[in-house]
Image (spheres, rainbow, N blue to C red):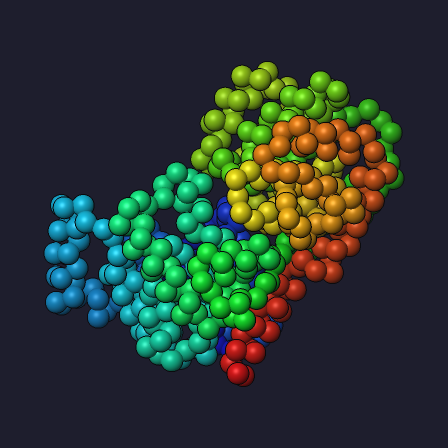
Length: 409
């Protein structure tokens, strides 16, 4: 297949360190290429359109029909009027420019695979114009993401945006959701047809980076005195639950003082987390390790005792961090409810606690740290499942299956 991978609102895939979404894109593209497919990536970032055919060389492009002549003049007038009178934003020109770029650069593709972004219609317009099937990647509710960050649109702008997003999702030939929770969300909130929405979970490259022999859960029990390591991998937005985790840690160290929390990641909310650490006197028990590549954080996870995923106020609980924890052979404590996250089985590969529940989280941490045999068994089983189900190759093969079935239909 010749696949056009689209991101109208792109992630920084050009240079490391890569965040979770960028890592997802790069891993899926690489694995699809290994399966024998040609993938060209067209994305918009920092106000410019970029094209890459190998994830190594990137070049800027222009949508020639859009960036010269009458259309360009009309765009300038409309944008100036919109800014002056603070009129609602339709993203029309952004989407038109992206659609024209797709027509210009990707007209010979067999299929489009698009990472869905907020209020962006260019991929759908291009697919319909060219007669190319379109598959959307639904990696999370975009409106919920904006609401969690406190920047969601209001009033007429919100109604316009929601209507635009529903039209995009309903126009897709298939939607690939990265979790069962997101599948349900896509159907119930955005009106996607159930028979068009399939689940393909994310993967992890730690299966490749780490062998079983490197993992604490597969090594002989170390009886020497040491600080037991809790690890959190991810961002610092409120819905990540860092504040809940730090409050729980205060309770944990009242029962066991030989505990250290390692925070791997960065982003908005980090300063607030640092302030909370200082306010609670946790400086000797928390380390901020910053943004790291997978090769850098892999050995940290491999020798930790517990992996933590304390989501709070988020509609889906199966984040990338859980797959990394599983691959690192970690016992995992994760927020969840109503059978989620489906990738963990309570008491078998993970320990699921109610979201935003500080006491339940603290109790879970203390219980698993006090039960080394159970902790090791959970970590070992999590690793075995990761090897069987959570490699990026496995994810890419499932995506390949969706694309080929659509082309055959």
